[in-house]
Length: 162
Image 1 (cartoon, rainbow, N blue to C red):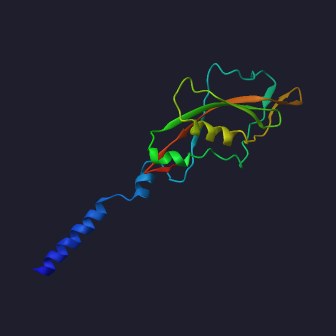
Image 2: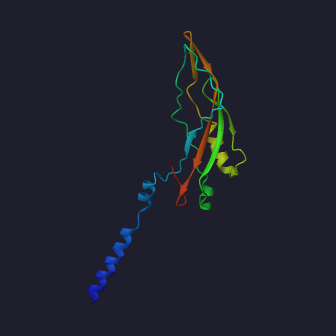
């Protein structure tokens, strides 16, 4: 009788463990990896002024420096279990490819300042290949700007990469 109870107890424990999804599997199924990174998206606004695409004019593609570090989720806010936080900025890049200015553009959204600071700190050090316009065989480096939105998420009190 004792062995039957022991077997049933062991079986119940194994089944209970097997029915719970491990955190890594749950995170992977949702597309997340818990390692503290942030997703960024370029915002293409129809009102943005762009350099015109004229006949006989071409632009070299912009390339971000591989060393550009993404903003980090503020660790002191992980315990707050905040919903996703979005920070939108406009970065202005000079003719050398260096970010010269980062301007928050959040339209009155209430965002903890620590998230804005994380974006400003990271983006201000970013570098890009210069924007080169070719016209009539002549190359000209141009300044440019881009609007980006950064999404901060966490899962199980850990920042996640999206």
